[in-house]
Length: 200
Image 1 (spheres, rainbow, N blue to C red):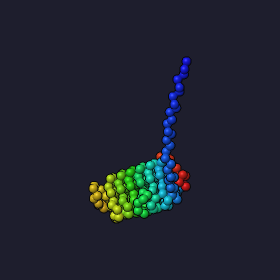
Image 2 (spheres, rainbow, N blue to C red):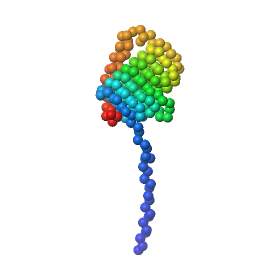
Image 3 (cartoon, rainbow, N blue to C red):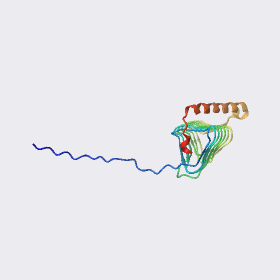
């Protein structure tokens, strides 16, 4: 009785992920009260400064490849928002003021965003743009490269501009918006798990 020869062993090439260079970790100055979600990304080699009571949500990206990034007290960077400039582009630093809300999917490459400003869902502030205090860039709107928006400007409806006279002329309305931001930050601090230790 003859035995059949064993079939040649099949060898499957084990595929390992291509080795990638480690992601650059920027020098970070993060206040003890700030919340940085585990799945947030902070990349680059330039300084990143994150002030007190800032909340950076999961999947938000802080990009310091081509310049420093500073985020002021009480500001929030929501999911999938991007602050800073991609590697390989021009040099650019970004300064976010206090009590600013960068909503989901918004992209901020602008030089400065003033205190109390809201950049709505999927809006874009292009390179070098300066957005004043208490402005609002509506969802899907765009502030063009190098553009300067005066305080209290609203960008809406296919790039139209107007001044928000209510915010400009009533301190109590500005105070109410600031209080709403503070309350939202307080709620998010309880919901977003903090992982800032990996950046320190």
